[in-house]
Amino acid sequence: MNGLGIEQYAIFALLTALMGWYMLADMGIGLSLQNNISKRRAQNHPYDDYITATLSIAIFLLFFTILVLYFASPYLAPTYLKQFVQLDDAAKVQLFFITGALFIGAAIGGISYKIWYAEQKGYFANILPAAGSLIGYVGIMFVNDSELPNKLLLSLIVFLAPSALLPLVAVVLQGIKHIKNSYGKLTPDIFTTSIKQALNFWFLLLITSMSLQIDYLVISQFLKAEDIVVYNLSTRISWFILFLYVSALTALWPIFSEAIAQNNWALVKSLTKKYLGFGLVFAFTCSLLLVWLMPIAVRFLAPNETIIIPVMFILLLGIYQVLRVWTDTFTMILQSMSDLKPLWIVGPFQAILSITLQWHLAQSMGLYGIILGNILSFALTSAWFLPRAVMRHYKNSTV
Image (tube, rainbow, N blue to C red):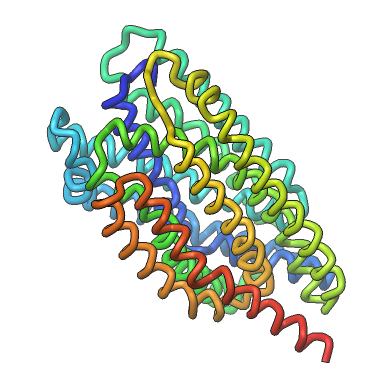
């Protein structure tokens, strides 16, 4: 923000906020691989063939999705960045395409994280993104202190490129490691199974994105640059709480997959109570602390700007965090056993509610309308439906 100013930082925020949509570029193949590895590990069987098949599909997806983005950018960029009249359409397309291509690289490279999580080496899957972010931060500092032209484009490149290239290198090295052991083992069934499971995950992720990632699409159409900055700063600080809990859930996923494959529901129940209890208390406590700490954090992050984040908005973010901790836990359990039917049922209803509520409330309530739309869409759907689905599995396992 110090290097770009409010207006250009708002563009930076809007473009980087599209990450969740670009994570769909792997078409769910990473999650499919993670579950298949966990099942093979539970049976003490090798899984090199699944990794080789998945990475073959991933190479195709990398080039195909970037090609689609290239032709779609001239249509999408001017609409998404329509509030910023100081940029011509050519500049908007360039920024949109380069940002998207780097995010697609990160999405395909992210398959490496799924492999590490399935092998219960989640520390690698946390260290590498942290390293990418740190390198990106150093890059941003360099661009800010330089006299280089087009700082917005350079900031996007230096910030996002490490997070794209590091996992891509990692996934190539993993492929080299496993490809030798998969000679003669690859069959059409491996590809068919992987693609079928992946598409199920992908359609589910698409529906989820329509619920969780719609906010910035709505914001881009209705809010001013100053409000975009307020929303971006407050949500990024607040959602760091959720990131910590989701990281723990991601590490638990393969443990749950193996436990469910062995019908060890006692372990599943015990871990669910433990982590859910901790997550709810953690989210609630951190949200209250943010009422006091948010102004300090904003002054630290944007010392040259006068940005005020209302207390009521911080409290609403806290309610949203608690709801996310609750629903994300049960979502992970269902995904770990590859039972996506409950998510398929509730997902479209939540997506429709989320889009409708945010679109209408944002026009009359601004920032508050976005977060209220999110809260209501969860409370009316996933928050009660998903726990019931998990409990049904538990009761059937004990019969």
